[in-house]
Image (cartoon, rainbow, N blue to C red; front, side, top):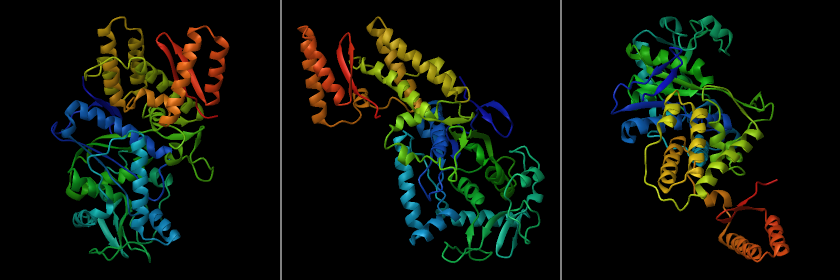
Length: 461
């Protein structure tokens, strides 16, 4: 079975063939660390975590180099630092730490590399110099700009003409530009902003050149897969291709372009003006990170995803169902196995997570209905192997249902469950009902089964 991915540049689904199976390269645009990540920022982190897991399964973890950059020089970072009266580095360190903690709660594996823009100023200056030397960039009034007119393929990724792109974007009008679409590679720093020396004067890099330089420095060109959100196709990724190719006359910058779809909040675009920006850092305080991850994988990654309370509720129920099957099979010992073919076919078909989830439920049902020990072991082992590729069912089933209660609370509930069982055994129904009422008051739900009663904490509210 081969992995097939939809390539934004060619506009078709293509079989994935790495340049070198011993060094498969994946680059994804990561966070700009000036604030906590919102749920839309988390979607690419989770989507490309699944792709990373699939690549590691196909080629071996040691043969996959996944780089997710950190933008740590930016206008919004500068503004935040100025507002708080603290150094830029204090802002970026704070929010990078929060980002990594939040993504960890969503079971996102740390990338192989996390290049920071400020650690690559030398590489950025060098790439800008190559663009100037080759006639693709020019200096003007302390700025260095990319000359869009020098690159005939500009617009190929987005599929739009330069005129259309200008009309649909907020293009800075400046008298020193040769063409309105020319974009900044280097610019003067304002008072109080970070500043570095360069052949064109003291200043700082533009956003787009950062990724191109970090890719060249850390992965080499061309890379196998470049990923990111649909909103980055233009101008960011369009500009990346122009810079990356023109700096050295390369035919290809990235061999596959993969973009995840937009996320909306109750069918509306997230925006501060609407007051509907949902931060992951806040959400995971009341919702298990695994539920958030499941919800982010509920739709095909290229499709829009509408974030609602119902989506979270259903995601929790889906995980309850699978964790329940594992809880009832806790005594079944298994050895690691490969995920079943039907599940792999779903994931390898352009990461079709809805189909893959359906296969998870089929495995859960097989575990519940198996009539022999061998069949139960097979179903449980395959369920765990498949779930690992999606980054779910990673916790202990008891802990999942008990929602992090402490030992004293657990001992109290277990004693009440035992007392209720003894009352039921002697047909003392009034006492059994009284104890059940006491458990309900503790927000505990009792689930009676053929092998006895189990329990879980009820959802708040």
